[in-house]
Length: 249
Ligand code: BTN
Image 1 (cartoon, helix red, strand yellow):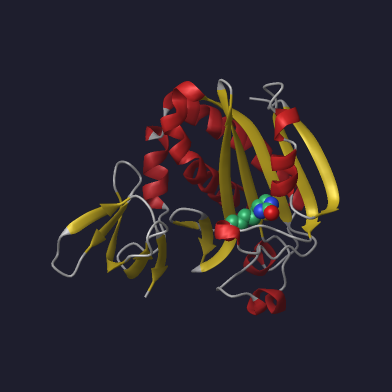
Image 2 (cartoon, rainbow, N blue to C red; image 1 turned 30 degrees about the horizontal axis):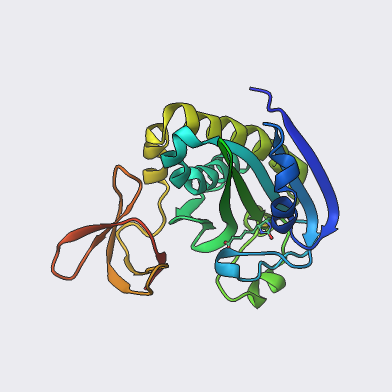
C-alpha cells in the first residue's frame, strides 16, 4: 500500500510534536496523514513532559493522522502498534532483536533505542492522533552514557553506519499499513507478535502506576489477550495491569 502522507521536513526544530500540535487545526481540515520530521530538536518532549535528548543524526518524527470516532476503543493500541512497527523494521532490515518494554519503549539488550509519545485530540467526527517517535540512530556511546537510563543506538548495536533514510521510509510505509490494519481489523492480528517481543518476561519487575503512583512488584508473566501486563504477585496470584511504567529489578 503506497501511503499518501504529506511530509514537512526540518533540519532543526524545537519539537516535531509541539509543531504538530500547534498545526492541528490546519491539518484537521483534510484527511491526509502528515509526518513532521527533523534531524535534531532543541526542546524534544518525552513521556510525562520529560525532556527527550535530541542530538543531530537521529530520527525525530511526529505522524498526525485521523482516527474515526466510531473506532475510538482501538485508540488504546496506537502506542503498541507503533512500537511493534519499529521492532518489525529493526528486525527485517537490520537483523536486530528488539523487544518492547510496556508500552512506549523499544529496547535492545535491556537498553532503550526508541521512545513513543502518542497523544490525541478530538475535533468533530475525527480524533487526530499525534504519534511521536524518537529513534537513536547514530547517538554515540559517550552520549548514551550521559542519559538517565540505559540507552543505545542503531549504530552501536550494528557496529556500523545505519541508513537513516531507509529506516525513515520503512517507518512511513509500515506505520501507515499497521495503523490502517488496527482501524480495520483490530488489535488481534498484532497479539502474537507483541507477546513474542515483550521485554522482561520471567523476570522480577516493579510497575509504578502513572495514575496514582502505587507500586506493584512481582514476576512478569508476559501479556494477556488484551495486551495488558500479567504480574505474578508474592502470593502467586496473577493480576493484569493495564497501565504503569515497568522496570526490571
Ligand atoms: C519517551 O519518553 O520515551 C517518548 C519520547 C518521544 C520522542 C519523540 S521525538 C519526535 C517527537 N517530538 C518530540 O518532541 N517528542 C517525540
